[in-house]
Length: 140
Length: 140
Length: 140
Length: 140
Image (cartoon, rainbow over all chains, first blue to last red; front, top):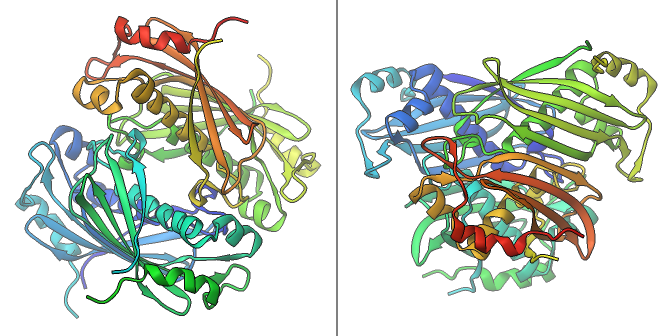
C-alpha cells in the first residue's frame, strides 16, 4: 500500500478565526510543515541543509484542498502524508488531516526541486529518490 | 465577458521566506482577503455584518492554486477576481495574481453560505445574488 | 525559586524571513502559545473552555521583548515561563527563549481576565489562583 | 514637534481571533510593516535593496507595546510613526495605532543596522541619517 508518514498539530487559539474554527490558510501552513517534517525525519534532508547550504529548494507547483468539516480550538490534528506521484524533479504529495479518525480535509500538494540561484529544475538525486520510493502509493 | 474585481497587495518582508520569495501560504491569505474585499466593496456585505451580526459565514469548500512564477519583496501584486460558477449556496471564484501584467498564479476558490449556529447551508439571498451575477464569467 | 513551565517549538521554514532568521513576530505567537499551553497543562483551564463555553478571556495588556541573538531554521527553541507578578485580574508572565542553553530572547507578557460579553475585568477565581501561585517567582 | 509618518491598515477577518478582536501578534506585524513603509517611502531605502542587494538589515533589538482597547473586523487602523531616539546604529521608533482618533495601542520598537553576512553592527550612513533626522521627536 505504500508507507505513510504521520505528524500531529495542536489546534491553538491563534489558528482560529472569528467563526471559532481554524482559518483555512493555517491548514496550508500545516501541510507545508508536514512536508518539511517528512523531508527531515523520513528522508534525512533538512530544510536548513537544503536551502541554506545546498542552495536548492522545493517551491510549490500547485496545491489544492477539499475541506470536509471544520477543526476547533483544542483539537489534535493528525496529518498523514504519502506520495501520489514521484516525477523526475517533482513530488506530488497526498495529505489527509484527521481529528480522532474523522477526516477534516484532503490535500494534493506538488513541489519541484530547483536550484535557488539558477531558478532551474533539477532531477531528484538517486540516493534521495530511493528513500522517497517507499512512500509512493501503489495503484489499487 | 463578465465584470472583474481587482485589488492590490504590496509584497512585504514578512510575506517572504528564506528563499527570498513569497511563502505560498500568504497567497491564500491574499486570495481570501480579495474575496473579503469583493463582498465588502462590490456586494456591499461586510464580513463584520455577516459574521458578527447575522451569524452567517462563507467557509471554504475547496481551494486550489497553480503557481507559475515566484513573487518578490517589493512587488505590487494585482489580484483579479471573477465568479467561475454561482450555485444555490456556493460561489466558486477564479482569482488571478499578476505583477506588471505577468501572471504569477491562478486560483479556484469555492465557498458556501452557512448559518454559523446551525452549521447548515443556506441559499444565497436573491438581492445579493443579483449583485453577484455580473461577476459570473460568461462561457467562451 | 518558583516553579517553571517549559514547552518546545521546532523552528520551521515558515517562521523565517529573507534574512534566514526567525521573523520576530513569530516569537510573540510562540510566547502566546506557551501561555495557552500553561493554562491548559499546568492550570487545567483550556482556551476552548475559557473562550467558547465560559465567555471569558485573557487579552493582552502589554507585552515587551528583548532579542539577544537570532534563531535559525532547524533550531529547537525551549520556552520557559514563570509569573513575575500575579494581580487581582492580571498575570504578568516572564518568558525566556533558549536554544541549547543559549538565551535568545526574554519577554514580559501581561494579560488580564475579562468577561468577553461585558468587556469588563474579572477577579481570577480563587481555585485557579491557588494553582497559579507556585509559578510566581520569589524575590531574590 | 518632529515630522510624523502615517500609513493605514484595513482590519480583516484573518487578523481576528475567536474573541472577535485583532489577535495582538498581528499588531506587531503591522508595526513592522509600517517601519518597512517608512524606510521605503520616507527614506527611499527599500527592504529589497537593503536585504537582497546590499546584504544589510535592521533586526529587532527590543519591542514593547501597551494595548488600550481592542480593534475589530472592519476597523481602519491608522499607524503613526516617529523616532524616539536615533543612535549610531539604532533607531527607536514610537508607533501609535488609532481608529477614528481613538488610541488603540502605543509601541516602542528598536532596530539596529547590521551586516547580514558579518552579523555586526554598522553605523547608519550619513546621507540616510539626514533623511531620518526630521522624524526625531523633539523634547517637550
